[in-house]
Each structure stands twice: as structure tokens, then as C-alpha cells.
Image: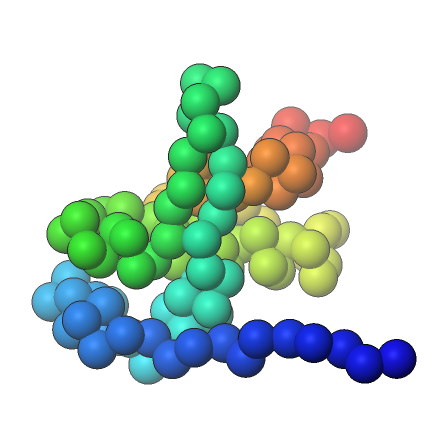
Length: 112
């Protein structure tokens, strides 16, 4: 069977520079993995929303970029080790999760 895939693109120079200006290391594993997650399609109050590190950088959303990285790191860890992953004490934003990821995160926060 032939599998087709698109390799993850490197973070754009403008996004990397923006992250540096926000005090975030663009070379950190967390930033690279959040960027590699690409665009997250979700909903906010029932309306469709698309969010990505690239988009947040283009908008100059320093806190948004920080929250995106923290939240994407959290959900990745949660999927790998639900029981052993704590909810981040700050910087978590459910708007950076897909609908299915939101359900998983809510199970963690409120229990089954």
C-alpha cells in the first residue's frame, strides 16, 4: 500500500521572529510541535473558527500564541498519558482544541 503524506513545513521566518519578540523560543520543542499541528478547526459559540500559530503571529497575538503552544503541548501529553498529565496551571485555552480534543480535556478537568 502506498501512503501519501505531506512533510511538516518549517516554521516561517516571520512566525519565528514574532515568537522571539514575544519572549518565546521558536526553536523549543513545544513551539515547533505547536506549529507543526497546523490549523486547528474548532467552534466558538457554535461558529466555526480556525486557529494556528502562523495566524496568531500574523495577528500579533502574543498571549494567543503563548496559549496556543501551552494548549497544544497539554493536549499532546494528555493523549499520550491521560492519567499522568496535569491541567496546565495557566495558559490553557480550549479555543485551541478541536471539538474532540475539547471533550477529552473536559474529561480531564471534570472527571468521567
